[in-house]
Amino acid sequence: DINNLDIDQWGTGRRTREQYVAIATQWRDGSPSERNELFDKYGIRWSELLRLPYWDPTRFVVVDSMHALLLGCIKRHLREIWGM
Image 1 (tube, one colour):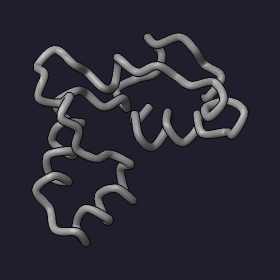
Image 2 (cartoon, one colour):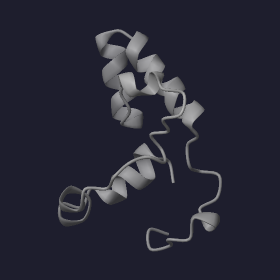
Image 3 (cartoon, rainbow, N blue to C red):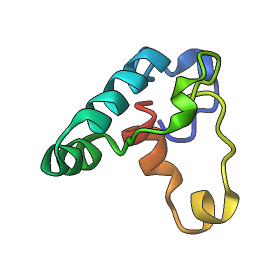
């Protein structure tokens, strides 16, 4: 339910940092065609920020209201990229 803002009710569909890093590492180490497939499937790429053990891209993200709300990208980010 996209309108449910209670994080405790989101269930286990949300990706963990470990899952995110694993997918990003596959992207980093993959061939160009593998990278395209991984990005199309998960919407995740490698970032040097992932080397920081305390940085969690599934929790430390600022939502840009113009792109997220006005252009309608929030649904894709919540469901496909963050796995909620």
